[in-house]
Every structure is written in structure tokens, then in C-alpha cells.
Image (cartoon, helix red, strand yellow):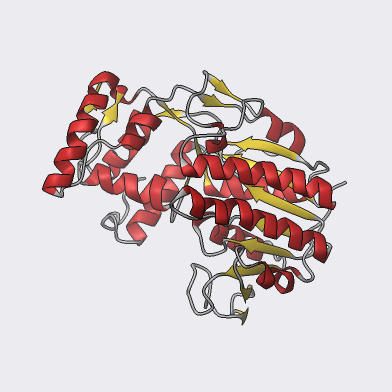
Amino acid sequence: MKTRIARALVTGATGFIGSRTVEVLRQRQIPVRALCRHPFGTGRNGNGGNGDGADGVQRVHGDVTRPETLRGALAGCDVVFHCAWGGTSLADQRRVNVDGTRHVIEAAAAGGVRRVVHLSSMAVHGTVRGPVLTEEAPLVERGDAYSVSKAEGERLAIALGRERGVEVVALRPSLVYGPGSPFWLVEYFERVRDEHVTLVGGGAGLANLVFVDDVVAAMLAAATAPVAGVACLVSGEKPVTWATYLGAFARMCRKPLPRRVPLWRARLEMQMLRVYGALAQRPRRLRAADVRLMAQATAVRIDRARRLLSWSPATSFDDGMAICESWLRREGYLPPAPVGARR
């Protein structure tokens, strides 16, 4: 039998996934407290100050890197959705993604919190993968700062949770898109619109996308499922090609499909464009991340999340992109749709 959530704290509550988590909890009438680093900053869901907002969300000023701010924030909560992350250098990211996670687990143990849902990332597996990715793949120990720090943070969360008697479930989302997504939606849309992106390998590589609401649904399932000390990959029903993904943006803004180049040529062009872009101060059509991401031919398996969390993604790629298009129009990235136009 699943346990109901009495009161939840969301760290990283003004970020993309964190703010949507707060919103969904509020919609489901689950008492929610949002941890905000800036006492007078404004998030997507409220006034940003301490106390109860008009939307019914309680906001508290705190920071996962400052453990003295966490005990009061956790008081009365039985679940923490740990979405906070940040930093640029490896040292900075370890301070937030590793030390910050340690502070959350320690505060949860001291405050009698039942469960922490730790938002990890598919990136903990690195970029060298086979045709299918499952949770059995090793976690990285070296590489880019984000992947390394997220892997270290996840290992710590599960181990420390076991040691301190806190139930920890880690989720490893793939590429999370949806309204407000700064990278997978806004940045790639703008690059397609401005013709500043290239389809590496002809766009045949796989993009393992997952809609933000499906990630939040997995987090809520993880908060009440009768398991602990486990990690689950979370992704869409099946991947799409990068040509399909960027092609959807091209149709929205009535632009041609981005230029296609083979992988070998992309690697050469990337080096030349890096120098040219720095000298000319113009956007590059190829970036290192493009080559790394679009060369992937791996499909993420979500069998464990289905089995242990009783969760499955509910949003198809077409439906998710239709929701994103409506949001892009509302926010002024695209002109309003003609009255009576079919989507």
C-alpha cells in the first residue's frame, strides 16, 4: 500500500523541473514548501519571499550549501524532492551537487523525514554507451564536471540514506524538455530558428527525450513506492532521431531542416568553427555538445521504473511538442497561431 505525502519540500524550487514539481504538488493539493536561495527573488510560481504565497505555496529562504538553513525548512515534511543543482567548475558543482546533497540527507535524518527523492541524471553514465542503456551501466568517475558531480552526488545520497535511515530513491532523467526548458527547448528552438545549428551524422542519432510532466509524475511515484535505496532511469516511451526533434522546431518557425553533415566532417568543422566563432564573435552552427549528443545511438530502457515505481511516460513526442509550441507562442518566441488554424 502506498503512503500519502503529508508535506513536501522542494529544493531547486525556482528551476525548470523544481518549479514544475511545486506547481503539480499544489495542483494536487499536497502541502508544499519551496526552498528559495534568494529571499526576494521571483520564481515561476509566486512572490519569492518567505511565507505563504497567494498560490498556497510556502516559501522559505534557504540554500543546500548552507546546512544551517535546512533544518527549519524541513520541519514537518515527510518527503523532500531534491532538485537543486548548480556550479560551473568541478569544484563548484561538487559544492552544490555533492556537498549540498549531503546536507539535505543529513538534515532529513535529523528532522525525521521519511524519504528523499534525489533527482540525478542520465549523464551519470557518461557518453560512451552501447545500443541500450540500463541502470546496470557503470557510473562515471571522470569526465565533464556535471556528469562526475552528479554521479558522486547520487552515490552519496543512496549510501548516506542507508546509513542514516532515510529512504532515498534516485531518478536519472534523460533529456527533459517542456515549457520553460532553457536548453532542450528554448536554446535549440532559437538555434533552429536562427539557422545556427547543424544535424551531425545527418540527424540519425537518437535523442532520448522525456516531457517534464512525466518526470514530475515519476518523482511523485518515487515518493510513495514501496522501494528505497534504488536508482531508476526515466525517459520517454522511445527515442526520436535528432532530425525528427529539430525538424519539429523547423516546422514551427517555417525554416528548412538544418544542414546535414557526416560525423567525421562535423568533428573537423567544429574545430575550425571554434576558432572562427571566437574571432568573428558569431554563433557557431556546431558545438562540442552537438557532436557528442547527436552521435549517440543509445536507447534508454525504463523497465525498472515501470516495475518498481509503477510509472510509465504519458506524453507522446507529438503531444509534448504541441504543448511546447503553444508555450513558445504565448511567450513570444513564435507569432500567435492564426485563428482557427489546425495544430
